[in-house]
Structures are given as structure tokens and as C-alpha cells.
Image 1 (cartoon, rainbow, N blue to C red):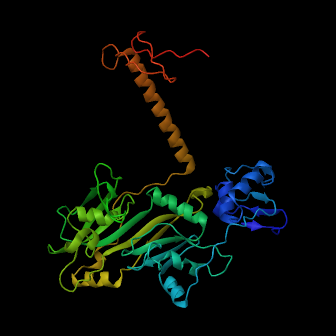
Image 2: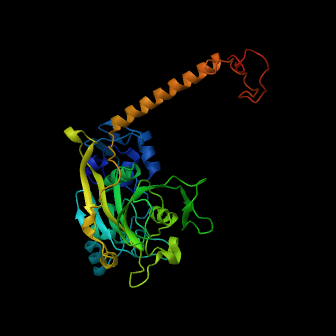
Image 3: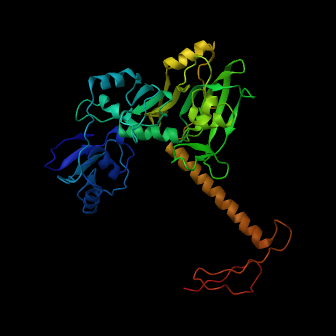
Length: 412
């Protein structure tokens, strides 16, 4: 965002690459949050806000390089600016120590076990609260969380540097093109060395939503691929896990449902989740690797296309590494390669074309069904008469008429 005039005059802003494709009202929310939506709507209605000299509506999409004309004022005095969280030298040092990769659009952390991703009831120390360490100046854009890890899960955590990057990365996670591979130690050894767990999940009643369970009737679809890397007799084994969906506690619930809870996960495995001896009682679940496309130009310089690949691996926490050594597992046996085939991300034009093709096929199938109902050719018998129903106006339809014919509407 570039401005050429002060806020007490008409202002001009150039739309940056990070805001390419965003709605006008969302642009204001990102770049001029002190201007409320009602003000933006009024400016648009009266022609005071313009894009490249033309009138614009709040839902108009912007393109990088366009120039916005914004009138002076409009600040919502009732809206308080965001206050930065005061961080101590130790907080800043902890935040910086978690960094394993930095790019133009992202900061990748190796989250330690025991540190929550976000705050909640009685949770005051968390990753989100440390992100101001990466925006030391008042005018710096604060990085944003893109996804989350459970408090006791360690490993790769992606942070977006800007709102535009956050939106782009979030689409990749929701579209399942981002690949996350976890390492886990589980109790016992699955009968099949590798496979896919397909078990819908729902919140467990009576737990306040803090616990999930398998619910075949009302649960949301949840799928996980797994592969046994190495086993320690029949006592425990080391597995790779790749979630194909993103449900709360998905990996933990799925492994427990198989009868092989993750070592240290007392919440879902009870006492059976703990190994005897000197094995740590902490949870042994680690987000080992993340592969995700970065925002940027596509091949051939197409705007809005795919950028490069961000491929990051996080070292094991101390307790996990110690247990691996104690059980005799060789860390070199796995490179945490994804267990599923690559998902090719489609460009907006490809998505639009696919939607048109789907709609065309649906209309064609509907015409076939209507034709079959009229002629009865699908069964070789006369089409059955429709049951008497009600018109849209609420009156009963008249009986009789040709078989299969619906009630006649009134002429207008």
C-alpha cells in the first residue's frame, strides 16, 4: 500500500500485490481499519471513493496497481486501535528461537510441546501472544496464524507475514493441497502396516467441546493415512500420519479408535497410553514436515498463479528424541514423505471452467430424468401419476388431467 497525501486531504493509495483480488471493503479493513464499513458504503454510494477514477462498490474486486481515491476523515472514534502486547526480553528470545525458516511471505516455527497456539480460558502464554516480536515497530504489520497445533503437539507451525499471505495460505490448507506429515509413537502395533482411517468425528457430549469421539451418524468426515515405520517388538511402534482432513484432535482420536493410542495421550488413551519404565509421559506427536505452495506468480508469469514450494522439516523435541533412541528407532528410516498423491492446485480460470462443466452436466442429467418421467421409457411402463399436492399458493391441486402432468398455474 502506497499513499501520496496526508490524512487531512484526499488520499491516494496504490493497490499492492498482497491485496490483488481483494474486495474494496476488505481492503479498507486491512489497510485503514479505523474507517468503518458504514463509512465505506456511504463513500461508495456518493462517489467519494474511486478506483482509477471510476466509481466503485464495496464488493468490487481490486487489482494490483490500481489507484484508490479516498476522501479525508472517516475515522471511527469509537474503535480503539490494536494495542501491542508488551513483551519481555525473554519473550522475544523465545519467539526468535522457534524460527526455523523465514521467507518473504511466511515465518515457520518449530513449536515446542506445552505451548498453546492461541489463548483461551486460563491460557495467557501462547504463540499468538508472541507474534509481536516479529513486528517491533508501530507501523509494522503483525504476522498472523494460518493453522494450529494442539498445546501438547510439537512441530511445524506456519505464520503468515501479511493479511494477503494469510488468506492465500489458508486457502491451501482448506483446499487440502497443503501436506502435513506427523511422526508419532503409538502403543502396540497395527495389524496392517499401512492404510487409511475413515472415521467421522464429532464433539463428545458432556465435555464442553473439549473432547472428540467417533460418530458414524452425526460426525463430520475425517480421514487419516498412516504407515508403520519401525516397531519395538509388540510394545510400541513409530508411525507416520498424514491427515487428509483437519478435524480437532483428529490424529489422536483416530489412533485411539484403532486401539493404538499415541504414547503420552492420556486424554484419549487413558492409562493405556503410557509406557512403563523411563519413557517420558509427555505426548509423542510431532508435526515433522510441511509442504505448501507459496503465494506468487504462476508459471509463465500469470498473475494469481502458483509460486514456489515451501518445504520445511522440524527437529524432534528433546523428550521425543530421547524415547526414539531408547526404543532403538533409527531416525534415518523416514524422510516424512507424504503418503498421498500430489494434488494439483487449479487456477481461478480452471476452477470456473470446472464449475461450468459441472453445471452443464447437471442440467443435462435433469433433462434426461424429466424426459424419462414424461415417457416412462426408463422402466418400459407408463409413467406413474403424480401424487396430489398443493400449489405454491397453498390451495389443493385439482385431481385428474393427463398422467404425470402437474397442476396448472394461473395466467398472469
